[in-house]
Length: 476
Image 1 (cartoon, rainbow, N blue to C red):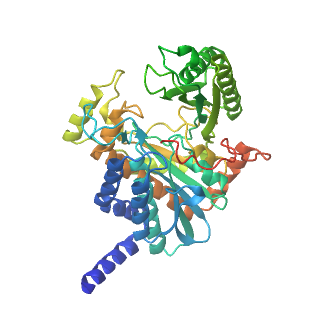
Image 2: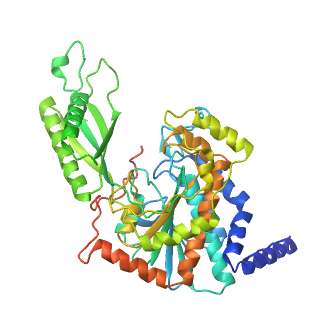
Image 3: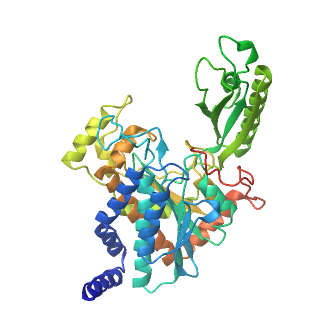
């Protein structure tokens, strides 16, 4: 046995010390395809929602620990958050990894709607691929640092609960990025692109109404319906939609509406999101939501309280750093479907209600563009990171072209070789981009110069969630 272990050590040493060029590093990532696809597939099967990603987080920690990274668990008050570090000194390069799933989108890896029994959630945003590719990139760059006898620090941030839980915000608020030079991230998608994009600021929370239970037929006069409070609030918010700016987005779901039709509900809850390119407008919209809730409680003779469960900044573009990522994405290139993948993708596209892009777009890289801060769709807690350290990322085609995020079609493709091909593209691009920064310190200087120009001299980071602790039960 000891001779076998010695042989493995010698083989791994040869592999490490051979990785001196970008081509070598890409080959090393390809060599780990089986390992990384197994990791991604396990996390896809776990499908753990925000702050409940116990097994997913542990698997990524184990993967990085076995590769020589030092693990710090449970950072910033979040049991499933962690930091994996390797190396010493400057520069310190951060790389983000997500792994939470979404509730209500259970789906098998097949091209037709098919839920998986016993699995209520699904990776409809591809975070099983996100965390795995980032880990693969971090490990490859670690080996490259050793092979080339370079100094510096790699810091992998295991970030839970991106979907509404604002996990990265607590890390930022805790000062865990204060010594980082630049940060890289990526996200699964339906196309390949590394533009310097932005996103919407977002604030989320739950409004809880309390009434009085009573027999809905025999004694309705003695009851006060908490559900009436929720519905009255929703009616007022829906009327408010006419009087907000075009860029505003407001969404809600009733998470508790009562227990039985013949019982006046004593408790009801509604879960709200408010988004806008401007953080100031988001704050104002949220205040209007709270006044609508108070008015609804007054009008229905109920009581209301609310809890802010999340809040994220818009994504701050950094063109200087994004161009590094874009150049490396083009060097890595796209991929082409095999026949089986083409058949799967064609069947998926037949389920779409909109025009379908050509399947060959997986082999192309989108035009590089720079978006102003706060212009974009969707929201991400990467936004908060981007306002304290220069940050850049990319998207790769892990889904069938034309697929919408948060859909069963995204879950399905993410559990197949289509998702894994996009994941490997991202891992290579992130690794090459990190190598460029380690090799050329001027890239860091340029990124910070642009960063300071965009934030302004008087900018001071203040989290939209205030000083509340992590909302560890927001998915319960």
